[in-house]
Length: 269
Image (cartoon, rainbow, N blue to C red; front, side):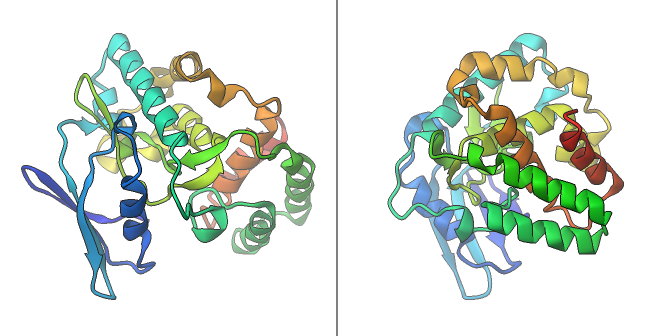
């Protein structure tokens, strides 16, 4: 769910006028507990009038990483991914009181299992999915859900695509924590690897045609070298498969490309 954004020389104002009042206030509360290593700009004030809400943050230098990426050389890209890994590690380790969980929000990944199965039923009606294929997905999810033990949980970003980051050539900043919550850390990893696979799906229309998956081919290796703990769960493959389905099903009605993504997961491709 996008917000309207106004930029001034020193400040950035985001406005949520689409309902769900409280998302930006929750981000402001989380921001109070972030260490500097998270590289979040910092909240100056926030509020609402009962119909819309707003959050005013400091404006930091830089361009959205996705836009900058198409002009960056290999060394610059590697530095940016190492900076991202450092920021995510600090974010994931953050302890906050009254931390929201997956059930408290409607983030890109619909979790846990009971909510995910309900989403599958909705997707089968909205698309519609072949009944046999929907049943295959349900069996697949139930078989792999035990991989989601308590190992590898923390404060996730929730939507860490490259338009939610700023890069100034030396420093990276994380933006938009409205989907941050306590969840499995692979929630962030799944989106990052999906950006590498289909960067055009995470880019604004004015530069989406310039994105190439080949330009992201080295990112998973850099990320693994910089943040190996993020890849350490013994059932990582099962977690990633379920999370990919969880996010794909949220795009209702499903396009033919999204349906193909589901088939690819079930066929281990």
